Length: 214
Image (cartoon, rainbow, N blue to C red; front, side, top):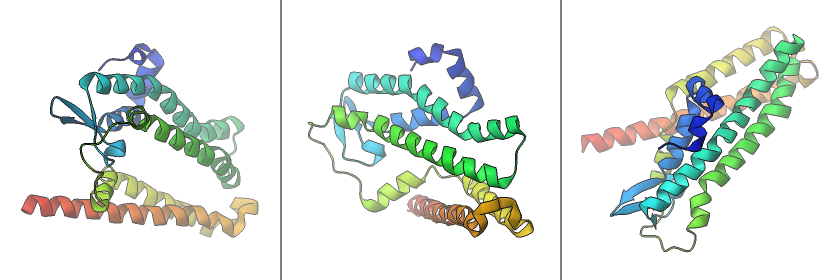
């Protein structure tokens, strides 16, 4: 489905370099599933099934795809800003990088997540008065759907980051300056999240194998 943003050269270049803008648009579209002569909309793929027409679904997808470039550009800028600043100032010490991560990346990603949540919920607001044709999915099914996108590559990358950060802390604690022992909180938090994601992914794979066996 072509939208007006597909004509922007910078948007096409961004989609060529980064794979996740396309996944962002695909995840929004996956909230709509065929149903009868139209579709049903499930918020975040797990909410109550609200009936919509083909035209309404297409209009929602086009509207989201027109806004997705700004969200993709904002998030990419947030992630790249500390790297650009570090290169420009020729300062790669961990104390400054950690400060940039906590003052730029963390708030920026939180804002991006909030904007994404609002964009994904646009159909729910538009069709709020409609009677759903099916209830929201049960808790176990919701967890399986929401965690099926977690790849083992993401888990491995998080584990490597934890190992690298702790290794730097052990070799040269003074490199982190005034952060001191507080610098351990970041890798420990990432490690806990990686273990949680690995457990959820394992649950998803086990459920898929059980379904295939039956």
